[in-house]
Each structure stands twice: as structure tokens, then as C-alpha cells.
Length: 190
Image (cartoon, rainbow, N blue to C red):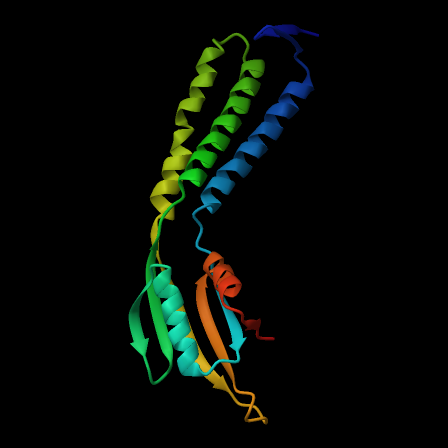
């Protein structure tokens, strides 16, 4: 059994180091896919029911989306369809957070490499951290994009004419849908 002395720590060169390297590679691939998923398009389509009339509902939704910096790009009054568009800015916090995660992951990878290759100068492995800001840059470049909200409103026929209900079909980013449901009360259609 061969003993290694790295960074003031005595380590034993056994299959443990090799398996740790394999696990670190798996974690690094997970980190890569996590960073890539941070900019993934998450458009979702839902159907919501409201007790407001079509015209009142369209006015409320138009005011709501305009207050959230969206503007109308297409309007079809006959079909009761509206398409809103707005620019979604990337988050500074998330860009810094992803860069920090990449730095931690690359530091762990460098540590495992230093155990696997003790004869090389171990400080070179720490230079891997220089590429960590690429994660934040990647997020910043891809996350800032124009989002669209497609909205269609139609009346639901019911046997009771005093209980008018309106069905709204909306396709938007899932975070935008969550905000909409929190700010304006709707019921999800079954």
C-alpha cells in the first residue's frame, strides 16, 4: 500500500480514490446539467375559470400584464385572443450563485485530481477555478430573453344563466402563471 502526502494530508492510494473520482465526475455532470437547465424554456399551458365576464376579464388581464412590463403584440377581438410580449431580465443573484456552485464543484474536482496525480504540481489543478465565472456568464447571456403570453378567453355555457363563467386558456412561463394565480383569483379547470 502506497501512502501519499498531499496538501499536508496523508492519503492512501486505494480504490477509494478512484471511486471518489468517478463520483466527482458524476457530480460535475449533474452540475453541468443544472447550469444548463437554469436557462431552459418552461412554457406551460393552463386553463383557468373565472366568474367575471369576458370583457371585464380581458381588461383586468391587460392591466395586470401591462403592470408587469408586458405589451400587446397581437389582438384578435373576434376570437378573444391576446398575445403579450415582455423582456425577462436575468437575475444577478442566480448568475453569482451559479458561478459559486461551479467554483465549488471545480475545487472538489481539482482536489480529487490532486489525489490521483500527486507527482504533478497540484496548484495547476486549482487553475480550473478560473473557468467558474463562465457559468454565470452563460446564464446571463441566455436567461435575458423575450417571453410571450398567449391568452384566449371564451364563455362557458351553463344551464344556470345567473352563474356566468369564463374559461381562459393561457400559455406562458410557469413562473408567470404562478404569479398570475397568486395575484388574481382563478380556479383551475378540470
